[in-house]
Image (cartoon, rainbow, N blue to C red; front, side, top):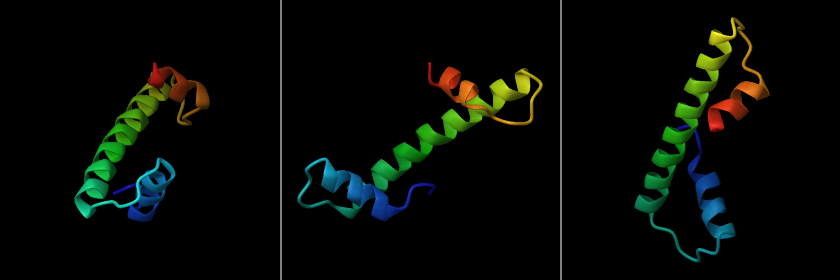
Length: 65
């Protein structure tokens, strides 16, 4: 997992949750990890297409569209 359990719990608490099940944390972690990985993969692909080794903020912005 890329996002720690504590960070997910903090996020849910700040969103107003008073209690959080372990299964809910796990499911959110999985979903966030999936989204983050796909964003990273697309960003890398865009930088390679531009014949660069460095992923730039423009790649990430374009990947988000």
